[in-house]
Image 1 (cartoon, rainbow, N blue to C red):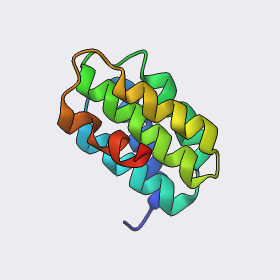
Image 2 (cartoon, rainbow, N blue to C red; image 1 turned 45 degrees about the vertical axis):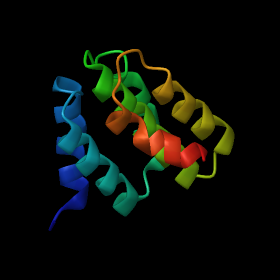
Image 3 (cartoon, rainbow, N blue to C red; image 1 turned 180 degrees about the horizontal axis):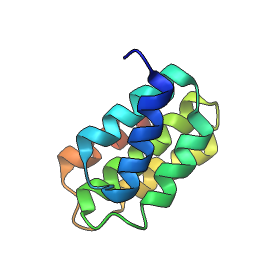
Image 4 (cartoon, rainbow, N blue to C red; image 1 turned 120 degrees about the vertical axis):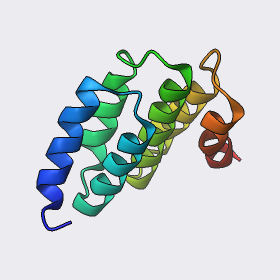
Length: 104
């Protein structure tokens, strides 16, 4: 990663096209941590929930948003995001595992 900021912008744009791509969400979250853009990225992931069609993708987006909010110190909103991940109809246990662990 010679250009984390550029990679972050590219991942941000790509997620707007395909919010169902779990590997891309993971890369985006990792870049977010490197660049300390937790709040902005959490908002982006929350916005993408409306675009994601796959229930597992919706659960992963909500969990990722919760992780970023928690890293930014916003425990209340993080818990809400994790709870939201657990209530996505049709999401598998694998997709919701991160939320379960965070709430435990």
